[in-house]
Length: 252
Image (cartoon, rainbow, N blue to C red; front, side, top):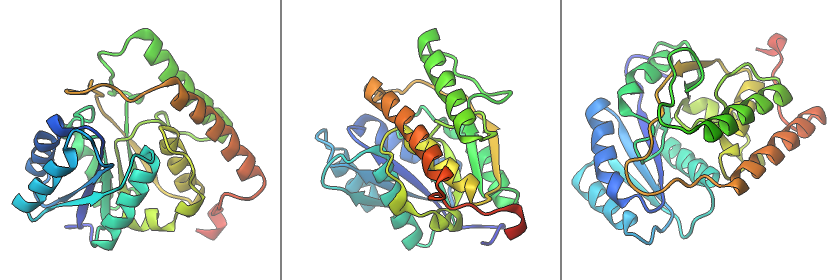
C-alpha cells in the first residue's frame, strides 16, 4: 500500500438515514476530499436508497450498494468492505451515517495508517481525551461494563471494543475469514477487532468524542446487548479450540 496517497473508501451502512445522508457525505468529502464514499443501504423505507442514487449521480466519488433487506449491521459492513476492496480500496473507513462519529476526527484516525504505523485504528471513547458528553449514567455503565467484560474474556488490551468508528488497511480485512464472522449487531465490532488482533495486526486507539445522532432514533436494544455477551463467550470458546486463526510473534 502506498502510504503517501492510498486509495481511501468510506463505508456507510444506512437504514432510514435520509435526513443525515447528504450532509454526512458532504462533510466526509470536504474533510477527506481525495476519498470515495460507498453507501450500503438496506432498502430503507424512508427513501434513503433513492437519495443515495441521486448523490452517486451527482458525484463520481460516491457509489451505492443496495441490499434487499435489513440483515444486520455486521453483514452490511462485510458486504461494504468486499465491495470497496473490489473497487481498489487500500484504506477503508467505517463509520455511522448519523453524525455520532464526528468528521473532525478523521485526520487523526487516518494518520497512523497513512504513516504506516498501524493496520487498524480504533476511534476510542475510553482512552485519555475520549469523551461521551451526553450519555446518561446507565448507558455509560452498560457500554463500559460490556467493554471491560470483552477485554477480560478475550484477553485484549484495547479500551474501546464496541465503537464503530474505525480505519482499516484493506489487506488486513482481506486476511480475515469473513465467512466465520457471525455477529450482526454491535458485537460485530468486538469480533472484528478480536480477529484482527489474533492475526497480529498493529492496532492503535485514537481519542474521539462520541456525539448523539442528529436525526432519527438510536438502534441500540437489549437484544443487541445479549447478542454481544453470547458472541464474546463463543469467541473465547472457539479460540480455545483453535477455531480462530492466530499468528504468533515467531510467525510474524
